[in-house]
Amino acid sequence: MDISYFPKGSLKGLSIRDRVEVNNGGQYLAPNNRSFVYNRVMLTYQF
Image 1 (cartoon, helix red, strand yellow):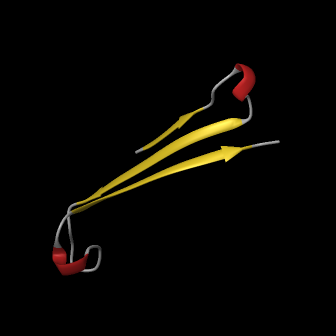
Image 2: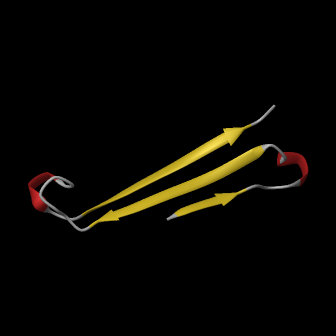
Image 3: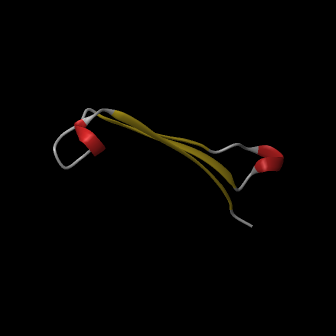
């Protein structure tokens, strides 16, 4: 899942993005064949 937010007004040019991945395992996808959640938040500002 990927969610992006672009505020307006004085914060125009800023973007906040949250990316979430849920992995339910698999021989080559996860260490020790266990489930894990990967979450990454990114802030970007365009001048």
